Image (cartoon, rainbow, N blue to C red; front, side, top):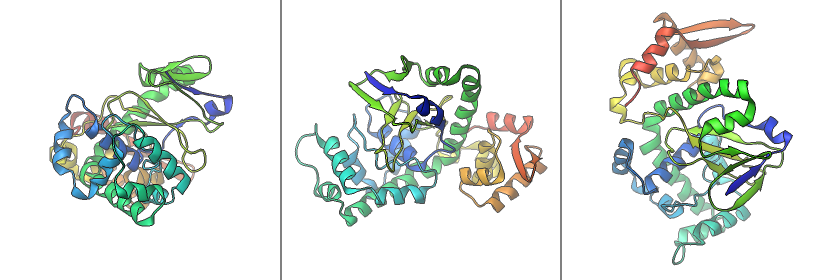
Length: 318
């Protein structure tokens, strides 16, 4: 059994990520590719698109895990997350990589041994592999990832408001149990304390397995709970995304992101565009009666109209 102990401070600091973190979704997409399981439609497409530059990642991700934490910083900006990977302390690299290879036969590849020593070129090999896999597999499906993320968070908030964190945890996945100030699930025997930092909750469009606790280093990387978003994201071939085909990929991403009301700056961060561009896309969608904008003091708040919600539901990718 895996157990995570909570203090009052941990509960107070447990929150949802503001947006889907690109490298977390990259790591979970790779883990799905490596896991022996019933195939999902996007997996076949992803295997065909898998780039040679990303092959070093196969040395890191064994089919049944464990999978590295330092390659999945929960930053919501891709470049910031990649810089965090580059800045991983040598002691943490050595510790994580030793654990990853402990139950595998033979010796790790030379580049992984160099990585464990903090070699700068080995780190760049890793970063290039992450970027290549993200570009080939994750980025083409990012609109669906964003939509799935916000739909999941929106449906959890009433549960949190009505029943508190205990009800929320048990609503995230039937395999999670709240007992005696701790969160538990079946798995290898392990127990963790959060040190007052709480958990960052991240619904994933790619992941379909049991919830995963990501225990960070307590300094740079916080502790996370990764779980499969529900209803699960439609991760189809981008060419089959009807909403993107009608509105264009960026405008479709803006519309999907507004499943949860957003300010202009928040919206820009979620979609990965400038605030000026987010404002312009919101105006076009507002003129089409898909989005409404209300002023709150000196700021504005964008949200979907009933027609906008219908369009997102009727023209979901997949």
